[in-house]
Length: 102
Image (cartoon, rainbow, N blue to C red; front, side):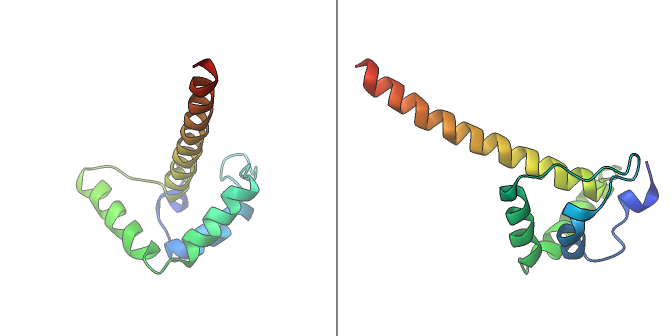
């Protein structure tokens, strides 16, 4: 793991804003993001609470003896967002299938 991947030299908001165009430190690939992901990152980077929330999460991770790379954290949040959207989509389909089965 690269130290620059763990430490956030700029504000978290700056890291969020730069994330779509920041190559991965090991292979140089850019993140594969949907337009919705890019829009989410933009909204998140513009939120006044972003730095404060990140500092709280990062501090808690350190208190538990864990390093939380900022890039990993962002990837996990985007992945959780995808799962939540998928569950909402399945719920809509399930309701439609139930109404048609009755």
